[in-house]
Image 1 (spheres, rainbow, N blue to C red):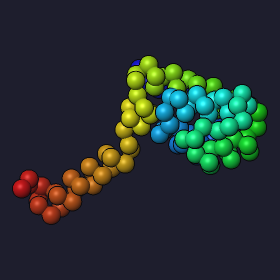
Image 2 (cartoon, helix red, strand yellow):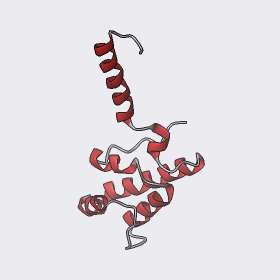
Image 3 (cartoon, rainbow, N blue to C red):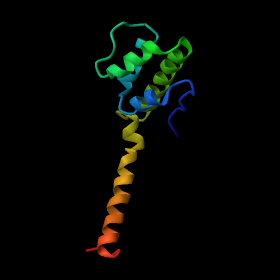
Image 4 (tube, rainbow, N blue to C red):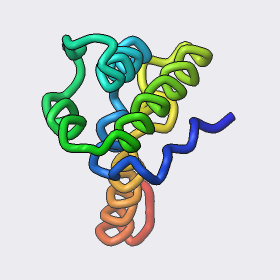
Length: 111
């Protein structure tokens, strides 16, 4: 099963910030976005709370709904974050780069 698809209304720079948040923090983000609480979660990035204040009502509602859906997805898989499930995209790039360096310097031979 794949993670919930983020709505197009959510800016990419905000989506990136969801990758490392726990289900509990995501639920807090949703409550904060819906103004069900005025205290932001401790783990919520300051840049996210600032960005929420600058979004229109439709975008804020989409953020809250996505945060809830993502929290549910992670809780069902007993995962601490989306990055835990999907991995770090830079990991593959580093492995590819390391492999290329070994090929260039070793003629493709394993030492």
